[in-house]
Image (cartoon, rainbow, N blue to C red; front, side, top):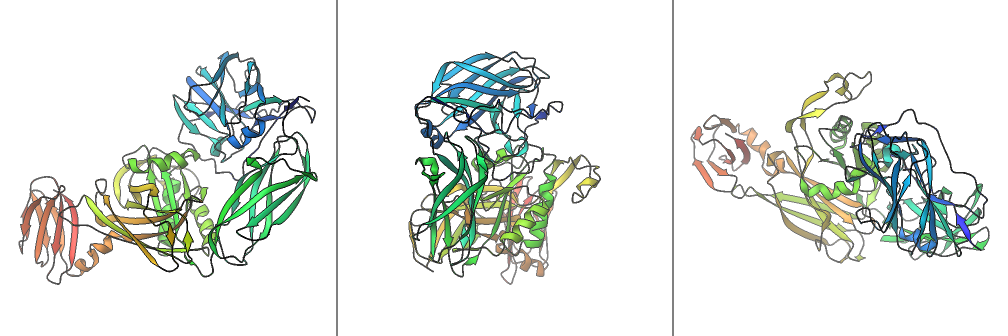
Length: 626
């Protein structure tokens, strides 16, 4: 029998606070009419889409807009051979009278199918019947629309339910794709699907959240989303799950409300534990039955997470990679939060990395990281590459306290040095120790250099004049000259260096890797830190990290005790205090001057690296501008 599926997939396991996004999206405040699709009988309709219904719409002014949702391969395989016969699109107040519906393999590919259609509803849902139904071949694809909007139009319909689901919130303005889900929710696109052999008892699992590090016997929950991809209403379902080599266990869920076709719900399996010690143990969860009937098995009806179970592990670092920019008026929120965490927890595991985009402090080596995480809006951050959140003082501290007792299966140390004669290169060395043996090419090292006191640069400040406590920024002007700390200057590499670690580890054995970092973007090496990240290829998380202060390497503190000071002057520099040797280098490593006991050294205008040694052997290195 031919069936039509109306699939409303609401997939959002956590919401990111909706601070202003990088793009200047403007909401249609007049349009707040929650609209849903027409009701249909249970055996006939489901519409595939992520939005919970039309609520309002966005614009950036006149121009060409695109919006698209992704149908992943795991879902498309369930409907192989079925056809998309209609597309429903929500828009805001519109003077434009036409849009183009299309299907493509990726966001950047040319459409494999496109069709012009009139906009008949200027505020709400427009249903477009496809002239030629689009056949689902089992591969993943994107479904979207393009419209040329006039000034005053609001072409991007949204549901106003914040989501971290990157398949639900793709938008483009002026040819640049972006994600808006964290601030505005899912875009209003729904697909009506028809077919003869659509699944009946089929549930999909997604967005698994679970512990990544536990101790033997420690109980933990696993949380995920279940979506009804079948044609039967699900009143109950049973899951099978195993940890590592453990015995199979089951969990049965009786729905407080029936899970209609296309509907989604969050479930939690409580009290999971294992006594098996190991690194990257799999937690496998699969759908066993629906309404007492054997579930139809598909790729999407199973999900796997990874955890490590170690007794008496190592202290784990709390690494915060923040995305920010001087143009971002909400980003002082992150400045306050990161400064607070560094001051209070900098000696107890906190490591901050401020990744700038679109300003003078942007570096190209961190752009792949921004492409992966930035779409969740500015400011934002990710902790240990596992939890995305706002970099506010309250949220960072709360999550730090929640996870401070979590241990790692690996310990890591980093050292760095450089030769003033070749100041454009820094030598770094990381040493890793695993608590347990491990087989598998899953771990890599990445090296980051940050720098403090960069600036002054002009920071935009939206908190100016507000009647609330924003760390003092409410008392500052709309534009503030500011010196920035923990600024990312280098990363090598965002996804880790290939073959930086072996494919297998013995327990408690040290493994060392050395490399060099180019320091062209670093203004003052004394004010920089070198951070090593241990990346887990199974989970994508930072398993542990360590930081080395270049201030310690250059022995600035020891030199200060002997009262030796380097003071740049017009036409040279002055050295105060007794010293044994002074060597001055150009930035390309050429010796520019050498002095022994002289109080002043003549130099042409430019930037230099100065190395001074006192009689006791203490050495200080400074980069100076003459």
